[in-house]
Amino acid sequence: MSKQLFIYIVDRLSNEVEFFRQKRDGLGRLGLSTLQKCTAAIRVLAYGSAFDAVDEYLRLGGSTTRLCLQNFVEAIINLFGDEYLRRPTPEDLQRLLHVGQHRGFPGMIGSIDCMHWKWKNCPTAWKGEFSRGSDKPTVVLEAVASYDLWIWHAFFGLPGTLNDINVLDRSPVFDDIINGQAPQVNFSVNGRVYHLAYYLTDGIYPKWATFIQSISLPQGLKARLFAKRQEAARKDAERAFGVLQARFAIIKNPVRSWDKVKIGKIMRACIILHNMIVEDERDESTTNWEDNVTTNQFDVSDFQQGEGNGSSHVNLGFSHIANSMDVENDIRNRKVHQKLKADLVEHLWNKFGRDEDNN
Image: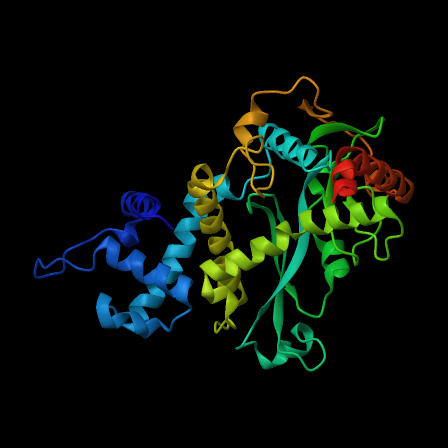
């Protein structure tokens, strides 16, 4: 986290949250400053340290640090949640579609995966529900991440006994599409037009029109090229999990809280802070795709200027669908999945096959 972003967060909290304002006691002496309170909370999140560990240089006791953390995560959610955990806007979707097209996957808007967070102090009565076999209790996070590691969807709190498919059955990831609240996405692959954007996944996910998996045993050059490109692109979600845990060690270490609601708030606040850091560092880390074709990052400003020959676009009018069951059937359509996957194999070969032959 840059100093500029940290100061911005401190200023917002000091101006809009009563707890973080510096006050005077009954004798007129100044109490803890906003910097002390915010630094203590962020240090606990970033290093996963004990509450009383910050007393060494911040002069805060353990109970005060706990209050700082609780108020900090709630303030982050209330002040920044609507912006940094928003559903993709039509402009966001257009950018994601253009980047996906440039990577060889027209219509792709991210990758989806699950992560388990160990729960050290899980109540004994719940251990059977949250433990799988002899493993420790865990809580599941389902997330959708894009190429720049921005987390667009986060669904947290289900027991660790559930696998990715069970989590998907309970997930609201497709609710906007089913309820007719999502912008319509149209794209063409290999000359065929499709109307549902898709995510890249690993092999456990079902063969739906909105999921594209790799080929487990690729036969031939085309299949091997598709598997190579798909497995490279779908690592965005796993990379996002790794960066999230590296930035906030409290998520990497087993959580010590007993309260599931507080655990959920900590996870939500960490994701919001992660997205804020991604946005703050985006201009510095992204490079021009046309100048450096070997980079894994993309300069989205080139895509936002508009490309007349693009095969993906977003209809700015929101869809109005009377029968949600028809939409669910479209999402779960296995035939569309097979056609789309076959078209993507051909599209990737036409786009990158010559490079593979030269290698």
